[in-house]
Image 1 (cartoon, helix red, strand yellow):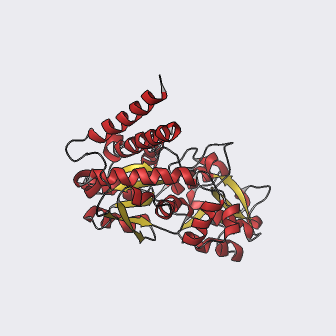
Image 2 (cartoon, one colour; image 1 turned 135 degrees about the horizontal axis):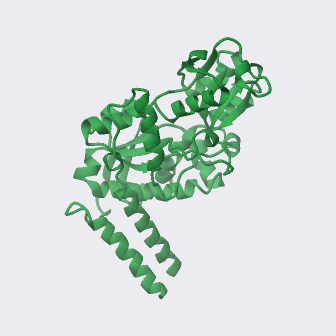
Image 3 (cartoon, one colour; image 1 turned 60 degrees about the vertical axis):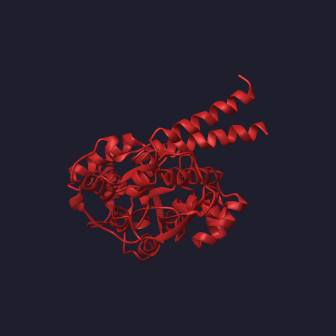
Length: 346
């Protein structure tokens, strides 16, 4: 097959995917006044593609103007997403997201976010850290009194807690579990206020930098391939303006590909400014795993649902087609493949 035929085939695939949803799914029209959307964000490394997409003009290329809404935790954005005050909710995948989908029917996960890697692959960005003085031969069983553990329990962290305790031969009765914001964790460990923390970058590196903690377990050993983050759309992008949702996803996955190039000087320029983190710290961090294709690990979400249901965190378990809409990442991947083929032919 000739290069000209390959280009035509890739472009045709993108057009067919964009047309499969009906009259609202017209080919991209990015000229004229940009479409404005509101997107949740936090100054964390896992949100980096959002900032890269804006800085590199990927949103503008898609005829979009994005307003970032800073949210402290994902559940704060769920009411806004359900009521239409927010268009895109990026953040941690938790029981609240799944309950919002179950209760309203007008929210869907449309892309995977950060995911925990697999044993033996890459570095560790999500980990269990413990104070050195509560360990004996690396074993948590020798911690005095109740183990004071800081972790959220409504997301993948909760699964990590249970698997960590099982491996250590501990029950929840032997542990005091509480929640704290991640920026407080290095000081909590250094001061002795916490014995064990479950956290992600940059707080893994910041906590280890105190010299008071060691890594006792990597996330990829406890929940291999765990789906830690997600991107969800509300009714506007799912039903009323899906073309806007498709264009946002094209920009997002284009930025994910640049993010996955790692700490290049250009990425560091952007993230030092947008995250407010020291450049050398950003260079040292383990960058969280993001899939180039944006596909959700559905099997892991089903595992999480099984765990959350037993914990009483879910209204009821959902089938994959109830919480996951892959059409947007499928469209975006087709568009980006076509662009790549076209660029290769020039």
